[in-house]
Image 1 (tube, rainbow, N blue to C red):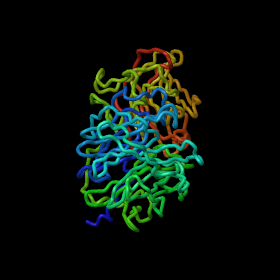
Image 2 (image 1 turned 90 degrees about the vertical axis):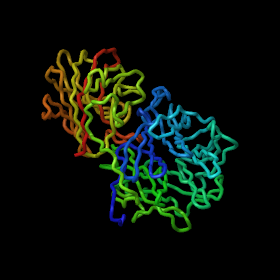
Image 3 (image 1 turned 180 degrees about the horizontal axis):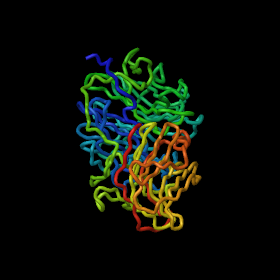
Image 4 (image 1 turned 60 degrees about the horizontal axis):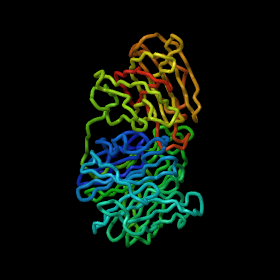
Length: 526
């Protein structure tokens, strides 16, 4: 078969799936992404062809594993690394809280199978910085590579990469750390995301530089000993789109991880974004796949025809993998939420049920509101497409003017759209709220019939959202006209997450025993 005539479509994981890390075990490939404050955390995927992926679980499923109390949306679980060695899967990760450069707690979890269950975290004493990685050498030694900030930086973004051996049983440092990359050597900024690979007689160090937006890039260095000294690749960066206009179809590529297939091909998973009007992107940072080759003195280089990450690319030389198709409609007929659903922070109390009214998702109104750092009664999924329609049918009667329930579109705790059913006096109303930079504005309020059941719909046409309600399945009553989608753009707030779409119910800082029932939720590209 001529594989060059077969192509796949990037991204391989659409929507907010950033900071991909990958490992191979035989003919199976496993991938993990950052999840920040969304729970369950660290989604795990499986594939056999690198193109088609199925989610098989989460690495973080216990509500009390971490303290999210001081975590705004772009904090929490940052870039993980997944590795396999002698029958055990390892994930090393950073939990960030209190601010982006405040508390950075690095830990390791393990599992016999990546679907879980995963162990409780073991925190690595003295491990600062972010984006840690693990490397198991041929002699069985276990190494930790991480990022750090120089105490006396020479310029903004003067970071480095250090290496230290880990005890295989305790996961604690052995001996002294060694600085293996000083950003000042190449005047690099925000050196992070280190991964070490061994090929032939050299150790290769791959990192990200330039920050995760405009100047993002992938850099490479190599050494004859794992502790260095490391020689930078003369063609650095080996992958970047920073020389392209920001309105290029794929932008801000970086933060990659390499994998070698059983057929001796090399591929990189890497994050990137799909921009629209004025460089905005609501789908967040997504996972892309790019071929790699080793040429020119055994340095890796991008194996695509133009040296870029492309929307269409030749497929890997691997047998086709056909996972069970994932539907965009949830009828809420199972006893557990599907993998696509997340809450903001682990719930501090159980606020939903799939069993009390079989075939419905019941959400109990909570006092928390979305505009604060908390765990609101919100269950959402990622926006995966520039253009989509989502629909749900809700049964809810507000008991007071503080109670509201319906659909919310979320970027972080300061940027939202809320399309909610509420009450004004004795009259039920539909309200559209816009929250921008923490400022909440009522965009529309319409009196509606005082009945329990209502259909809610949101349509996205790249740069605008449109909101509709109705009392029959095919009735679409518009509210407020088009609303700019850029309010939920990651570019707008320099956030690390993408837009989430889901169901929300609040009692507005008051107590309530009320509930909203959702019969189904449909999301599909248009």
